Image (cartoon, rainbow, N blue to C red):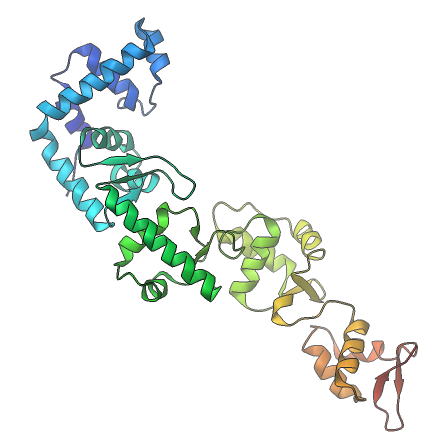
Length: 334
């Protein structure tokens, strides 16, 4: 259905006095997309801000009583929209989806004229939203609580369809998304998965979290220059990353392990921090028996992306390693 919001607003304002039209147009930004404050309008019209408020409220009440016929079509359209999204919608998304770029103020004005549409201000748990009944807000709260419980139990992000199967509520995807959109505790990652807002892979804060998100998604060690490129592609919100700055951040953070020349992996994958010699020492101590050069090389390559010759060269450190009679290596006791 195509709704001409601008024409509808013009038609319903026609029966008001020019002064009342002027105040409503300015308050809601119906002419220039810039809503004006009560004080600004009062100063322009040489009346008090309280008088402006009174005229605004009286005019809206008059329109509600006398323009029901002209408002029937947009109101039905709004009701259908709300029903599709579970009876409520986060305010920003609602205005973007109904009013697009040009008519968001007109949609907001019309919503204020409908008794079926209720504005709920921002709280600690929800963003500003509109709902057709307060019961839908109670349902959204119960659903979000169930979602948070599910994430805490699984401790891993999920796709929206998977999440819908996990929770106890049988909801269509648009409704589930609408309830998530109003929540401050559940977020969508740049890759489209959903999880808790404090998870770095869901809501990355700073270069370290963004690098962590990239590595988690790629699931393989990457050179810091490649990580920097992928961060820049994650989201329009992320700025271009200087590879050198990223390198300096990663090398100091315990979540990342340098496994080759400029190549980083996540410690949670089982990579051990330290130099090649330190890795060899850990391998030998863990084995509790002497190992051949080939066995050591194989195990080190599971931890580091380096040349075989580099490993063999490090094995020549007689201060750390010694050979037994069979030519196998063991750590040298201090």
